[in-house]
View 1 (cartoon, helix red, strand yellow):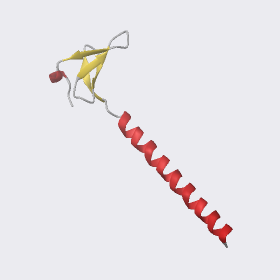
View 2: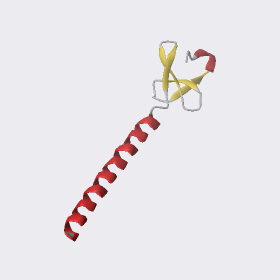
View 3: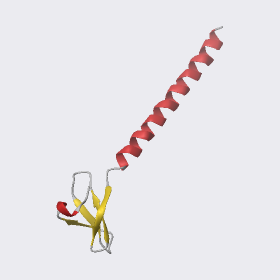
Length: 73
């Protein structure tokens, strides 16, 4: 009887751990969605960042900020 309870207990713990890790991955996915496409500037895709800045990525891959009024979000 005690072994059966231990096995059942371990099963529930594994289920809880699985659900917790699944929930955490969902949070991580949400946190990565902090930038939005918001129009174009001289043919370059504009993005709005997590703090509200408006930028495009230049030829070097770096962010070049423009006035926020250019973003259409």
